Image 1 (cartoon, rainbow, N blue to C red):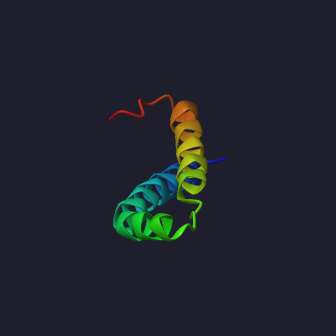
Image 2: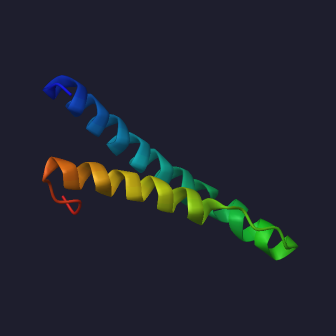
Length: 67
């Protein structure tokens, strides 16, 4: 992979990670409401998969995920 492709991939995964976190935050009231009704939404699994992909990209780039 060229540097430009690697940078674009890293930026895309970074943006997807942050959009997923934002979606989780915005959906939190809906998740609480649906749990009271007895329906469970798979938000945790989705956030976990995106977070794992983000960490893999960060580890491959040699950067800290906490930055």
